[in-house]
Length: 104
Image (cartoon, rainbow, N blue to C red; front, side, top):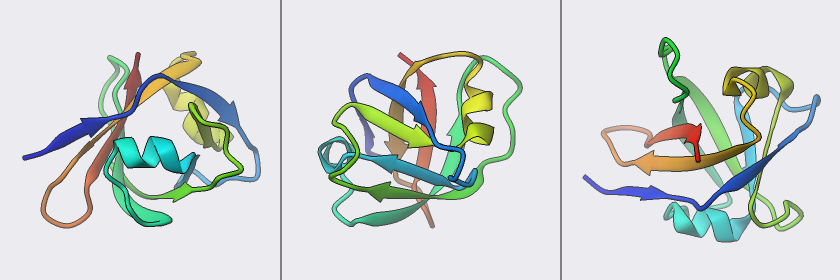
């Protein structure tokens, strides 16, 4: 089982994004081992709260996204418990990989 993570990411919200959409810079995607522009993941939020059931989400890598930034929708941002900096962790599993958003 291989677990990879990004460095510290600053949060940027975009009200046009759905809960199932995350955007990162390709260099941050490389840290996670993502070699394709769009990847389907099982998304979990890890902030010392009751864990919700993972949701299927899309991680999109765009050069327009500033390095060290995670862009997400308002609904997803509300699940960060006020954190403005996070770290992404990805774990391979059967089916889609598990992506966790957690505190730095």
